[in-house]
Picture 1 (cartoon, rainbow, N blue to C red):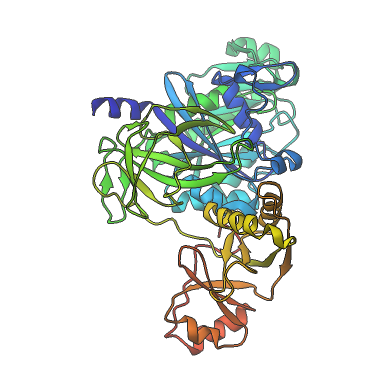
Picture 2 (cartoon, rainbow, N blue to C red):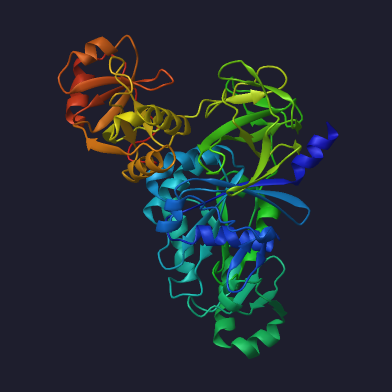
Length: 528
């Protein structure tokens, strides 16, 4: 198993998180450019081998709206390391997907807009990182545009996130007048040259302090004085406090122009930890060189319209994966073959024969696995349960064409399995008129679009009177159903949810009937 430890040490698995429009998807593409996974084209970044698209936003609705709706996995090599990059949805309506992806990551890169600083979704995502003890780096993006002051942004990070910002790079020039960066570790001033549409790697020139003073004048003087202040305050990157989530290494740049991207990617290699022993449900830890195990953190169908298959995204947690090996699905205890295993590059896929801790696998049509399952080849492995989010929006779904009911039933089952929405059923009605429950309204648009386009089952969605849900059990169900303003429905996995017309009524039931099971779920209204 020495090869397993060696290979695991080469892995860097991290997620990119941000508020919408902070530049996360652009930064993802530029990472791929610098990693050699993309080539430069005429004014645009293009996929390797002439593929049509290699962006993480592969879903049609993502491309139309310019937002990330679903997560994506991308793998490339850089500096003799294997980089596993997980792009996450930026929109708060898909925060449950983001939470699941962070379970598969060893660190995160938080992208901030230089003009906006900490935004509401940024704060929510940070709270998830802190809860999961995921160290994070900060990339202050769009420094080529007017924005806040660098010291002001550091102050905001410290006061809002209660974490110490420790700049690795420092900008020369105010936001909107970006000249280059000072790398505080080496002391080098790296001056950038723009390229057409940011389609190629930005030329970098290392300039002496004396020459920088001549060329940049006041911009250099201000930057040099600010770095001296940072030195005096002992605000230098520290791996120990970074891994303890007490500090965040900060990088400045512009993903659009490629300024500062290489320094950030170098920071990923230097600072993001390689895979470590994984926490188990019993409180123990699973060594990376134990027999093969993995965690299913996402299930996605419809990525390839020509095949209509289903992919289970698996984070390898221990051991060596070999394509074709028999594995056991923790949820059912059944064995299955891993013959159709692939490595993922956004929407594109390639067959993979070997994988190691930190890698992300796509298991095609592994129908026995569900989100949150452990899969393993040796003894039983049980990872902590992935929590579900509390929905706050509820719609009744009805198929418009009754002849398409079979497709409708298949479609809602798939959406529920993926976690795209939660599908709640009345045991007496089954799939006749299920209630779709969501964290945010945009989830309904995605569900409706996919039911029509992927499954050929157009639906109408009608609002319900419910506003809040609590997890309950079969024993409490009959008494709750007998009350006005309450209903109890089930998910396919057997989970019972009590739906209430108002928070006031729910609080009253809680006060009057403490014997009933009504459990609060992870969060309400997205990430709390």
